[in-house]
Image 1: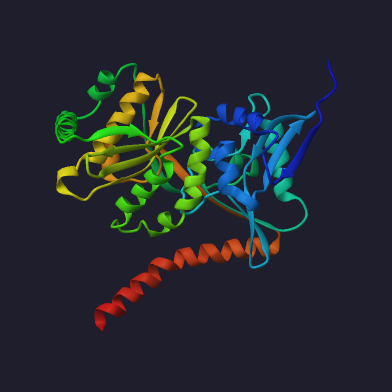
Image 2: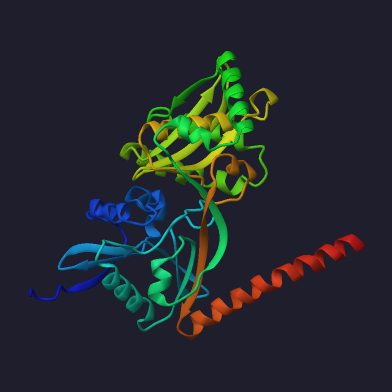
Length: 348
């Protein structure tokens, strides 16, 4: 028998020069997420990156991508982009056969001397991190998805007849109106993101996302260069009518954001665009389309299966545990306070 391998945990603010080895970890994840790719993390984490890398004899065998800030003076660790950018299917990464060593190393980091808060939203089902720490996450959302069959017709056969008819009719009408479909390039990306901004401007709740568009555009540029991000556009001879943002990694199509014209003539443009992307994914041999988090009704037209999206809040050290407990108390009180305010408004 050989000598036991030496396991070490490194903390780094940049994945380079280990980016390729890191992406190999993502390839082996139960749900390979584009939001774990090195190109996404390099841009979105920025100067707050605090990545935990687990090595054995100098070989990268696992890790956990985090960003670090402070909450009332206590170090807090979150996922890059957590909040507005809504990254999904995140977790501790490990090469097959090294899961236990990676879990042990990260658990030791969390329980080491000092104080720290973990506040992680976007964890996948059956999280390795939660298992390593012996903690139970809270399910906060759902992410519909659909395994893809060998052909586009096979996929359409799984959708409702009303959806099939309506989508084909809308597609024909757009073609008759001179609407064409193109895919953004590095040269057109800025203009296409500007079109996304314009089409999103009248939609309620889009303000925080639009404020993050400069950072998202930089991430998309990096993803386009790697062939793992795509921005698709439907445009008429006079205007852009729909824009979608998606990711393609490890045989999975992840549909991230769409925006469309509010003109009644283009009411189904976003549906047509997504259907075309899925058709291309099937033709390319992809295994799955992931609608990502959110229970919007339109997603049921494209996908039947559902994964959970989870949140873990945990503290190590008395100040950190107190902060986590206080936050939980605020969350529990929020419905009561909101109800009380509503009653006050109705009575005035």
